[in-house]
Every structure is written in structure tokens, then in C-alpha cells.
Image (cartoon, rainbow, N blue to C red):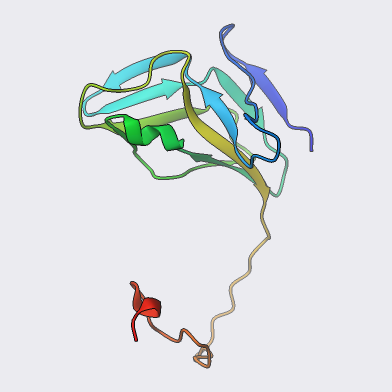
Length: 139
């Protein structure tokens, strides 16, 4: 799949896979902005995501070595968005990413068009039933 990408900053790096077979492509910080208890990193990139696809933005595993947590858990970029890809993190200490660091990873996936059908009753005839919040591990 080809995805159009626009560099908004001369320092921006095109996302890339670190290893063959990786699902996520690394994204890099080209700007950093402090906003109250948040740190916002810009990638200097905008995308033309194909119709019926979305870009999911995740933190990297290296975040466990930082005093940061992705503010919205997983970012969702819709195909109509043309602004800069940014990531915002909650800060809990001084250890954070620097300009040029890999700050996250992206995955572009197709999604089905969903149409809901309102009904009076759902089938409960499943092995899980209505159990939630860890109930599948309990006996």
C-alpha cells in the first residue's frame, strides 16, 4: 500500500520499520513543546491516509524507561485528517524524549464500515457470557 506523506519540517524523517516483519513503523520527534503537565512532540509529518483506513499511533516499548505516559493511550488518525502527526505525553518526572528520538510507532489498517442493528435480546450462549474485568481467568 502506498501512502502519501508530506514533510512539514526539513528535519522530519519518513517513518520506517526497524526490522523486517515489524508491524509498527517508528516515528521521530522534530519539535518539543511543554504544556502544563504534558509534553507534546511534533513529527513534522502529515499523511493522506487511504479511505477506509486509519492510522493508529502507539507508544514504543522504550517509554518504560521514561517518565512519560501516552496521554490518550492510542492515537487514531482518520483518513480526512491532514494536520501534523503529534504525540502528547503526561509527564511524571524529568526523563523524557529528546528531539531526534523515536517517540512512537504507527500502524495503518483497513477498517470495516459498521452498521448497528438495535435488538431486544443478544445471544448469551457463549463461553464468556456477560463476565468481564478478568472473569475469564476465574473458576
